[in-house]
Amino acid sequence: MIPGVTPPAHSFVRDFASAPAETFRVDHHYLVCVSRGVLRLESGGTSWTLPPARAAIIAAGHPVEIAIPQAVVSSSALFSPDFVAAPPAPLAVFDLTPLARALISECGRWGPNSTWSDHAASMFRALAACCWELATRPSPARMPVGRSPEVRRALALTEATIADAPNIEAVAHDVGLASRSLARRFEDELGMTWRAALRRARLLRSIELLAGDESRSIAAIAMDVGYSSLSAFNAAFRDLVGQTPSDYRATFRPF
Image 1 (cartoon, helix red, strand yellow):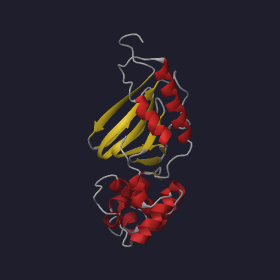
Image 2: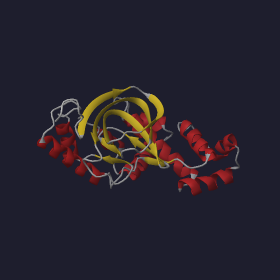
Image 3: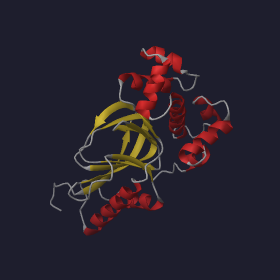
Image 4: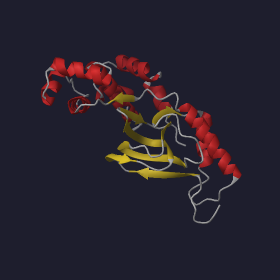
């Protein structure tokens, strides 16, 4: 490796304070894995929730809106487009397997100023191959965000009131539409009813809370996102991610 020249792939660990959404774009394929906290990523009409033990891959040059609702510790890897093939999608969030976690840990040995070697190249290529394949099975923790300002605003209002009992009539009034018109907009732009969007928003918020204060009970989190019945919350959560909230939280192991 020539001194002062960045290697074709490298890794780093970084802490980020909570922050509002900003546009993020780099000239490398970017793999980010959260070990503590939560990220929200938006691109292509979809918003993704990235909690611990999951990863996101962002293709080189692809703009993504990233928000940090709570402080984050992340392990990341950058890959030159000349070093590995493009990922299967411009943005994808996915679960990590034990192999992927082991490769992330191993690649953590090589930062931007580390000595490059054939072993490093093999490890980073293996990491890319593993994560690129996992990205073909994206996480269900995502929400379509709509195209029109009215739907995007209605979705934001719905998300802001999930702990209460939001209703479509009040949301429609606030965005200047009749409730029937807003209902049609949701189905046309999001591919789901307003009530289904409310349910999804509650579950995505619960994932953020699960990744926050670990001492907070599942029952308290269920109430925080508007569920009066713990059994109903557990069933809805399992229906979305395939695990109970307790089992899902148990996967939030640090690297």
